[in-house]
Length: 211
Image 1 (cartoon, rainbow, N blue to C red):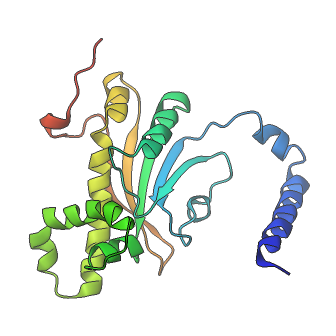
Image 2 (image 1 turned 30 degrees about the vertical axis):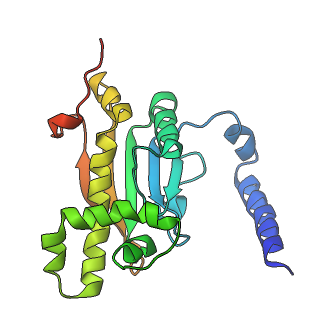
């Protein structure tokens, strides 16, 4: 059997399993979505958002890209973010990186990888910001893990610097930005950073909104 056909068979089995428990499962699902969380994660196939958090369809609004980056010229990410906070009214945004991230590892190297060089450049900048700390780490695997963590923390700040998030906070909306890392070896999630309306933000990145 061709491998892609196994996916179709698995889908049919999944549907039957859901209907056997809740006959109206899909009838309820098609009406609306009311997720409380926006998950911004890495595209790595080993970190499926719903699976690692034990969530059902409809509970997470998901955006994924290589190395879970928040880039202020990425209109794909910004469109997801705006829809999540302004239409779906999510209460939590989770930026989740993971140890063993290939994007982070390649950013640590000098390999020429074509177009993706442009994307990984943002991670190289994070290395530059934290060069003293990272260069003091002799073990390459430990350095890799630490850059994974620093990347998550930088992306939390990048998200807080967007006008979309700041506008929610200015209006008194409840929105928390979390930075997590997933450990492929243990399957556990760990919290690294958290920002909300009370968190300090460099003044140069703050926006003034009209009343």
